[in-house]
Length: 134
Length: 393
Ligand code: B12
Image 1 (cartoon, rainbow over the protein chains, first blue to last red):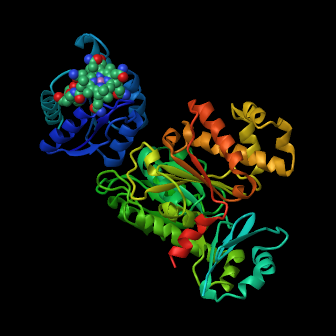
Image 2: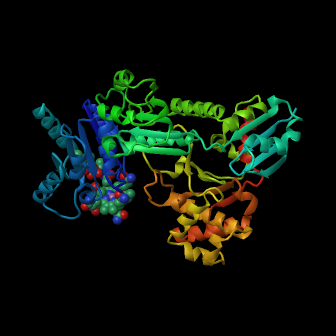
């Protein structure tokens, strides 16, 4: 399975990105890592060029909302119905309840949302989701 | 026996013998061959054909239409390769919206189709064929996913298939397309009456000038006191070229070339003077800049030596401005990181070191609030275009 990943917006926190790349490869995914400072359009373009199954976005600096709220618009522009969209990291600034964050990002068009949670747990969820879908 | 190097530009001929460079303003009443023969025939007769090297930017180059799957990868990669091959005229079509583009009426020299890493299926369909049927072109090439080869070969006559320019890791790999385009340029020159005749003078291949200049970027250190990252600005009569170190760009192109090229078709001081003036008048800094140069707006309508000088200064300002900001240009350069700028082309004959200092200072002060500017080098002797020609042969 092909996964496009990277860190969205003007976000330079690179450590998680390296870990995610390695973990995904260990789990047998074919990884296309766009690295830090990647715009949403570039993510979607990479999914199209690689015909990826999953787009896994990280956001650490708290700006996820601003950079991702247009996902719906991009999803309408192309046929991406088979792609799984996931986001994780620190999805907001300060103490915001998870019950508020998850629906918000699902509303933007993400299938899986993981806020301040463990990476392996998140990737387990992703694999379960993919299994269920197939 | 020594060599003689000749550059046929849109406004000047440059002739370089040993250490001496002469330049001749074109006489547009005559065709290139006659004009050249008339001015330089005597000098040329002293050299064997093997020792005469010619490059040319006078024939405008190839027109290219690129049809690609996405802006961030296929179109960006192919555009990058085409510019580096010396091509000036590039139009792009985003495949998902192909039915919204009006097909160009004029003949296109080469159509490039690209999309997908190898293994990706069902990218192109009837929409592509429909569009292709409406345009007229000389050459058509495909440099995308291998899974589309059969479909395209079956449906598009004479399509030439090459290695994918997008690697399995989504990076760019452009050598094959670049050399194809460079060769096509040669054939194009051969096909153009004006230039074809120039082969009467030389036994060597005639190259495109931008290609020659780009190839000399890595040799710059030997001749000039430059420090990386640097850019080279070549302001000619018709176009303005920027050749830049890749270190200045943040994007996901991982290219094998260290130096890329970008073209501004409409910022030349002679042949595209009107659009240069138009562009200047619409710039937010223009009045401040004219005041800084101690002239009024009227200078833009004048045809004096000083007007040409001011236009050249404006042209420098505009190319820096356009590459530094988000303008939907396909690249933006981090000019705040720049260590050196080299200027070449016709401007070095008119502008002084003080002139370029002054304009670059204004630019850095206004846009970055910097008081220090990169080292500025004027290639007054046109050493740059001789570097590759002397090395390569
Ligand atoms: C190191 C660091 C920096 C370094 C980054 C160096 C680099 N190039 O990576 C520097 C100093 C440059 C920096 C800068 C900034 N930082 Co900082 N930084 C940190 C710090 C201390 C550690 C980050 C880190 O590397 N952690 C280790 C990795 C492994 O963990 P992680 O990033 O959390 O990722 C894990 C999980 O989040 C998860 N995960 C991540 N993505 C995804 C995706 C999915 C799908 C899943 C399932 C899981 C998942 O898995 C990862 C592995 O377990 C954190 C605080 C902290 N302790 O976390 C702040 C922190 C991330 N930074 C923060 C901020 C605000 C900034 C700045 C804006 C500060 C400023 N005002 O200048 C700038 C932003 C710069 C920019 N443009 O991005 C805030 C973010 C606040 C928020 N989101 O609410 C934090 C949380 C600090 C804080 N508590 O305020 N930072």
